[in-house]
Structure formats: structure tokens, C-alpha cells
Image (cartoon, rainbow, N blue to C red; front, side, top):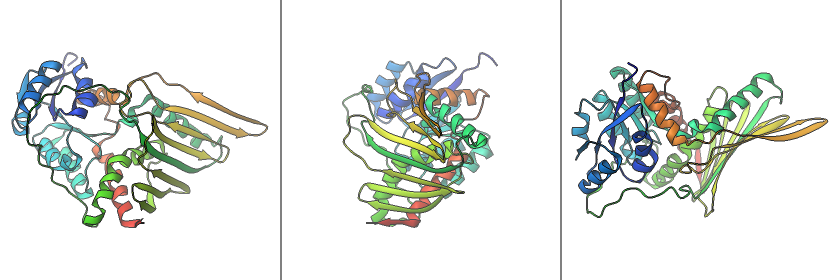
Length: 351
């Protein structure tokens, strides 16, 4: 039906729930945000009024019982993605969660199987795939691999030194009230001992994005873990894909901007992708092509139209609900990320 609008429910309306997600569904003409569930009653009412949401529920059970809710946007602490996601999918609702997808591969596999059983969509909020610059970079890299114009792909060199990820993102609706935070049940792989759990949280919370992005840009998309090194909050990962060497490094730093780059190095040049701060609505990935084919060596930049990855992600999820193309980061695809990050912890050295 051309006039049908997807009915969206929100599970969590905190900072990211509002500024990264709710705002991008509330202004989408192809959906209706019909309800939200929030344990802070004053905040729930204030957010609902601000965004024009008609129904407010004190818990997710009532939200999931609402027949008008076709799909749920779940913005919660990531350790809760599995227990909450399982209830959403079991209720026959499509689902998109924030990254990382889950903390255990077996639980991710269970959610993917449940989504298939119920015939619903399960997506993960890895919005870098929707960045217009990233889209151009992917087409460019794949074209170079197919044409061999720059010779063979030799390595992928990536880093994320973080910095200012908010970029003056604005303020969410706030209220003054006391309320218990929803219980977070920490869930770790069996091979991650208690003394390594903090490192694992850091790895999957920050670098799930980078692993997923490299896979998206890499023809074939599969990677094997060779080794990892953790030194406090600095880490260095070595991976491979066929004959391609992959390195990923990162650490949190004080920096006035966002410091993240992924470079695909060919024999005769490279493609550099500099990704923007997650909450910067006015920046897209900067893509630079360098060719070193004697006697000419040249560098040029590719420019994409400005649009926000989070906004495009919301549009993509709604379009999928209405019968369009599948989301760019499905739960099934993102199982690969979970498997890689679990394997990092098996093979890593802690200095």
C-alpha cells in the first residue's frame, strides 16, 4: 500500500535514543512513532510531547503488546541487547539495536534464528555503512579490485583515536527526577575472564564500528584474526583476508576533532577514507584516491552530498519495513563482527 506508514516503538529515550534515533524517525514521512517505553515517567511525558508521540508505556512489556507497534528501536546499554532483543523478536516485532550487536556469538545466532522464525527484520545500528562518502569509497575500492588498475590490494590500515564524537550535537529533552536505571545483566563469552571483561567492553563498544566498516569496504568481507595486543586502553589488532594484511589500532585521546581513518593500500596507490564524528550531522566521510602509475602520480578527492549516517540508517530501516531493500547491517551479517571480536580475546596478549 502506497499510503502505509510503518509503526515504530521506542525502547529507551535517553541521550542517544533521542538525538541519534528518535529525531530521525519523528521527521520521517514514511513512518509513525506510535509509542515509547521509558521508566522515567516525567521524561517519558516530556519526550512524547516534544516529538508528538501519542502513547507512553512504563515498561517494554506493554509496548510489545501494542498492535500498532510494528518495529522497535532499542537504544539501551549493549549488554541488554540480547535479553531485550529476544523479547522484541519473540513478540513478532522487527528490531534495530545500537551496536555492538551482542556480547556473545551464541546469543547473536539465537536472535538471528528467532527473527527468521518470526519473519521479521533484525538490524544493527552500524550507521557508518550509510555514510554517503563510505558508499562512494566502497564502489571505488571494489572497482579498483576488479579492474586491477592499481595492482593487487596489499593491505588495509585503519585507526580510531576517537576525540570529540559529539561535535556540538545539541541537548536532549531532560527532566529532574529520580528513577532506577534499568538492570544491566553483563554477558560475556565463556573464554573472557573477569579481569579481561573491561577490555572486552572497550573493544566491542568502540571497534565493532571499525571491524564492521572494514568488512563492508573489503571485497568478500571476511577476515581472520591473527593477533591482538592490549596495552591499557591502547590496542593493536592484526587480521588477514586472503593475501591482504589488515591492521587496526586505537586508543581514546583528547582531541578537538574525530580521528578515524581506513586506508586500502594497493601496489600502485591507495584509497583513504576518513570518517567523521558519529554525531556530526554536517560531515560525511572524506575519500581520497592516490594513483602512483609512472610517469604520473596524482591525488584527488571524491566529494559526496552531505547527509547524516544516522538519518540515512533510519530511512533504510523504515524502507525495509515497507518492503524495500534489506538494511545494510543485518543481524545475520553482523554475526561475523561478533565472531571476530570474540576471537580477538582468544588470541590477544595483554601487556
